[in-house]
Length: 354
Image (cartoon, rainbow, N blue to C red; front, side, top):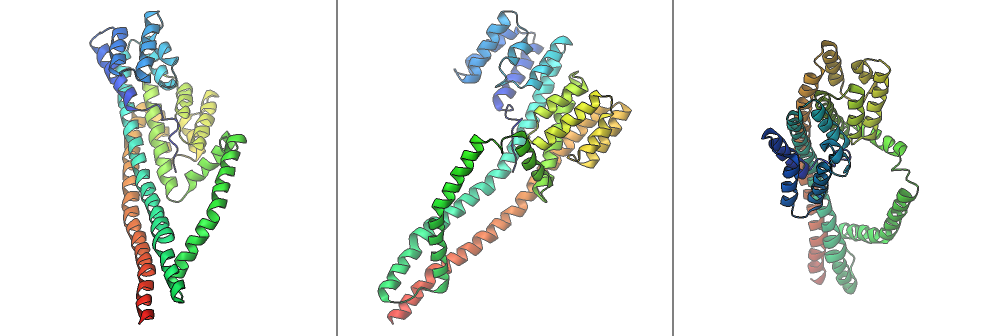
């Protein structure tokens, strides 16, 4: 349902690095030695080797922000841009604290999203395996052989289940072939991976009845949190919008933000043009416009980020609460169907023998 691209940088290693570096700057410890100690703590892991390279570049006179920027696999552009702003404004400690808070909140939001998606995925896979192993491969085919030897017919419900199983495996080869063809088209033509293809898919996700609401709230939470952090770090609004767009997981949202950025550069009001994107909740857009007019845009964005974080959490909780009993009902129906299909032949065999 959701793509987490744009927040892939947010992990526990980056959060730990940011917190430790903030503490070191607060205690006026040398950044180079701090990086050396943290690199050793990583025990040769890739991130630790990256910190060693950053330390060596700092020893050669490269500013911290530029040294981090050379390793964009681990340090996103907005992160390095804020570090640079902290260095220029002699406020590196404040910027690092701000980044640490932002990364913490984003990491927790991502974990809640993944946890919400994990449950239905695992349950669906287990149900499919039960159907294949118990019904189609295990018991029903054996009942069929017994009935054939006795010259009797299977009950209709058992025959139906067996027919479904046979058809399933008959068409399984064609299904796998179709998947392979789609994958080949995906990697050769790049239609789905193209900006236009991804835009169309992500636009559909925004307009789905149930998932669209959750997707828009997640987009709103990330947008307000990232933009507020960048503006507080002294990044100009057009540049902050570009960096915020790069962190978006949804191509439709990203293109909308970039369109607003272009209009802001032409002298248009940010809040007014944000209303025309039709990808964010109207209440959020209205409050941003009011905050911009009153000169309280940063605090308004912080308030909205906290609000939509809560909204995302409650939406996930509601979706989970709805899904769990639904899964139980589906499993109950399937169990009743399989039990009937498996035991009815047994009773018929006993009656047939009699």
